[in-house]
Length: 262
Image 1 (cartoon, rainbow, N blue to C red):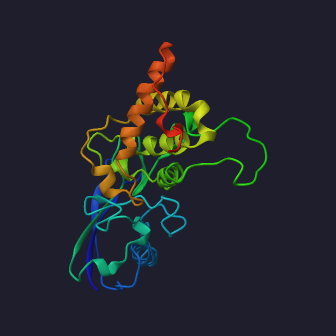
Image 2 (cartoon, rainbow, N blue to C red):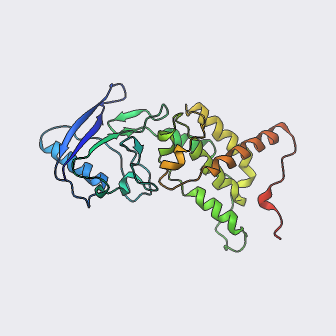
Image 3 (cartoon, rainbow, N blue to C red):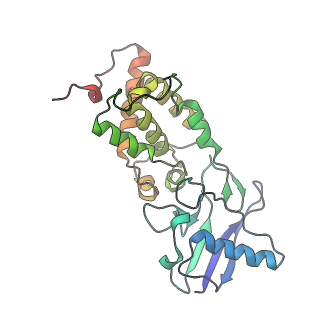
C-alpha cells in the first residue's frame, strides 16, 4: 500500500518546525500505525537521514504515551483507542496522512512528534493521590462499597493520562483529566477525607500550568481512548463548589453517595 505522509519535523523547542512529506509504498494493512512509522524510520536511517522522533512504550493502549495527532484528530480516526492500537487497514492506498504532535501551551514540543507532558504529572502531584495511611491490605468485604460507587470509580480510573483531551480542546483544557482523577478518588471512601483539598489544589495547578478553561464542546470525550465521559466534569464542578463551601466554613451539602440504602 502506497501512502504519502506529511510529518511534523522540529529540531527542538526553539525551532519553527515544518511539515515534511515522505512517500512510502511498503505499508501492510496489518501493520499498526507505530509499526508503519518504524518502517519509515528504518528507511530514513538507511539513507543516512535523521529518523522521526515519536513517543511510545506499551503499544497496547495502556500507557498513553503514543501522543499523535493524525489527520487533525488526536489518536486518529477510530474512537476509543490510542494511536498504537490503530491499524493501517483503516486507510486506503494513495491516502495522504498528516501526523503532528499535541498542540497545547502546556505541552511544549521537545522534538518532532514528542511533547513535554510533565504538566499532567504536576497536576497529579498537586492532589491526585491519597496521603492517608490505610495500613496493609484487608479482606475485600471489610470495607463495603456499593456497586454504583465502584463502577463509577473504575470508569474514572480508566483514564491513562495521555493528554488527548487537552490536544482536542480549543482551549487546551485539562478539565476531563482532572475530573477523572478527582471523581475516581472522591467516589471511594479512602479518598473522601481529602476531597476538598484535592479538588482545590488540582484546579489551581491546572490554571498555574497554563491549561485553558472547559468550553463544553465535548471534543475531549470524542477523542479519549478510554471513552471517559464528560459527566465526570459535572462531578468535578460539583466537588469544586463543595470545596468552596468547606473552605468558607459554610455547611457542605449532604453527600448523596453515602445515603442509606433502601
